[in-house]
Length: 259
Image (cartoon, rainbow, N blue to C red; front, top):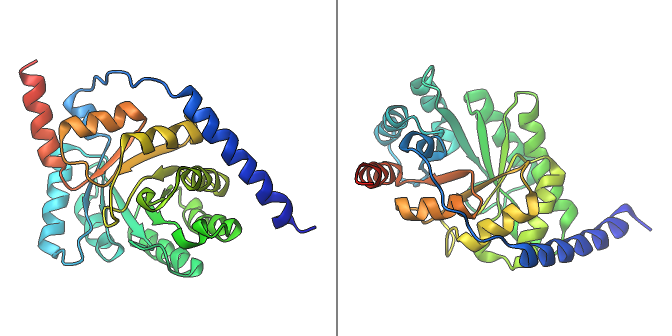
């Protein structure tokens, strides 16, 4: 019997057990109390539009430095510009990989990750192979992630794995989380922002329950308000991907100023 035949029935059992445990033990979200600065430090300031101009990327970097966001997240062609503009600011440069479909060859994703890191990326956000996951091709999914993880390992660059949860059943979300952890990913992430729906608190809570406290959970897609940001953090996210970071900061400052 092959390693594949032995391993993946065990994974399916782990999925069932993890899902049952997450549903049975789901805690009530606790109130989140963060200063404006603490909230900013959880935000990946994002510009991923196909028609993004260099001038818009420059503005993104200036905003990220002003508000002390965790990072900027851009397509790989903009990494070198961001790395130059953000040098010495403490703001990380994040690059997407295999974005937004995840349907590229695994070796192409690994190559894009290596090239982005050479250009100055300090984090990579990759889209897993969604079709392979749904087909139960778990070895392919794991190895696809592992190739990107390995590309970053020598440079200390963590990998965030985008599940694109809107396409997945709860069982598939759990399987994706387990495979990402097995492959060495530092974070699991909900969405690209280009799918049929974005992050939900239910998905964030499920992902957090599966990966535990040692792996990050990034909520992304549709996070456009201070209220939504706090809800995602309360559900278990410790990083937020959003193109509305400035609006969220302004709302946070107003809310805390009137508290």
